[in-house]
Length: 151
Image 1 (cartoon, rainbow, N blue to C red):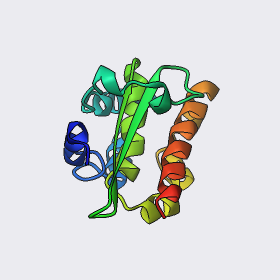
Image 2 (image 1 turned 45 degrees about the vertical axis):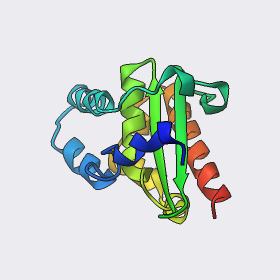
Image 3 (image 1 turned 60 degrees about the vertical axis):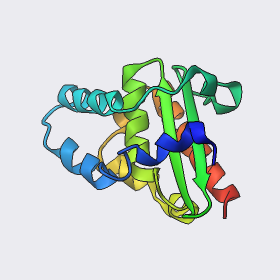
C-alpha cells in the first residue's frame, strides 16, 4: 500500500458518519438553506488532497467545479478507501455525502449500493443544478466502475 495514501483509512466519512447519519441529520432541517449549510459543513471535514494527487487521472469530468477523487483498494481487508477534493465548498459537501455512503466498503457493497434511493431519501438531486447533479453522478460512476474492476 502506498504510504502517502495511508490516512485514507482513517477518514471518518463512511465509518463514523454513514449514509444513515446523513439521512437522519438532513431530516432535522426545515429548509434547503439549512440543509446546504449542513452539506457544506460535511465537506469541511474532508482533508485536502495533496497537490501531487490532483492529477488528470483523478480528475472527475462532468463536474461544474474541479474535483479530484483518490481511490485506494486495501486487498487485505477487501475495502475501498476514498478521498475527494474540490475547489468549491458545496461540491466538497456533495462529495462527503457520496463518501458517507461508499467509503470503506467492499467492492461488492459499493456496486450493490442503491445511490438513487439514497439521493431520493435526502431529496438531493432536484435541489441541484443539472451540472452539479451530473457531477455527483460522474463521481458515483467512477467509484462504482473502480469497484467493479475489483470484483
